[in-house]
Amino acid sequence: MTSIYFSDATLKSFSAATKGGKSTIKIEIETADRYQMASILNQLDEIKAEQQAAKTPRKVPAKKTDAPLLALPAPLKQISYHGDDHE
Image (cartoon, rainbow, N blue to C red):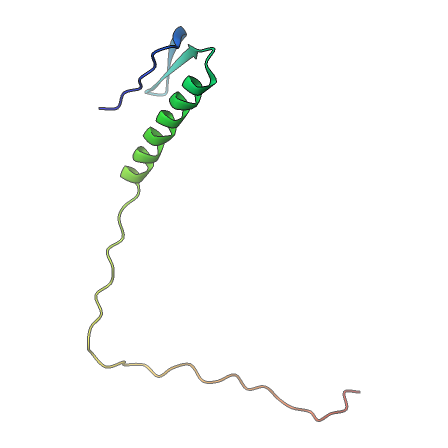
């Protein structure tokens, strides 16, 4: 469970709305201390990062096999040379 700690800040207002089956809660917190504000914003940023990390699937590294390559590498590019005079 995620929580936010604020000691010198006060809860100014809150509201909730539901639209299309999803609910949104808006919370306003008021503080006069800029360090307290920075602390709350850092906590919110950490919560957002944790939620994003939980949503993104972890990539499983591909296992390298000792099997021989079955395809030939792409051929070298054929660059034509027309001499020194370009008229």
